[in-house]
Length: 178
View 1 (cartoon, helix red, strand yellow):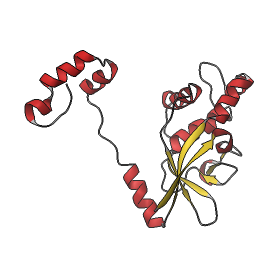
View 2 (view 1 turned 90 degrees about the vertical axis):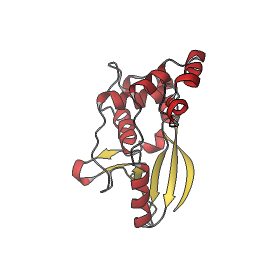
View 3 (view 1 turned 180 degrees about the vertical axis):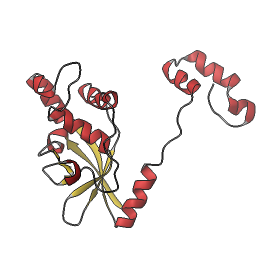
């Protein structure tokens, strides 16, 4: 599979956004099939989709997305459907955050969102390669345990010292966290 990393501004992503349920969900000027047959339905809860928008408003990076370029020049979302729909729904006024919808933002705040660049890998390959890659990138990672979450929230020199003495790797040869 060939791939190329591109920066796609949100203004281009949300261009001609339409979600027609069973008839499909499209964006990027009608050239991006956001929910191809192998994708699940939109499942993000309010908090998850709000977190996507909050990250964008703060200028923080969100995870890279993958699109498949089809032979007719259109695209399908291979990975990033939930984030894509969250962005499109917010910009089209389908939900607000803290009673502030996109249409209620200042012109500067709207521009900041619309100019935000998404990192998108444009992939080209056979249908078989596409589905194999879909399976690989959607294999869930290992969920953090409670201690690993605490380590992420409360970092410091004391944590580094504690890891030296109490990590399971040190004790048992297999690191799991302090």
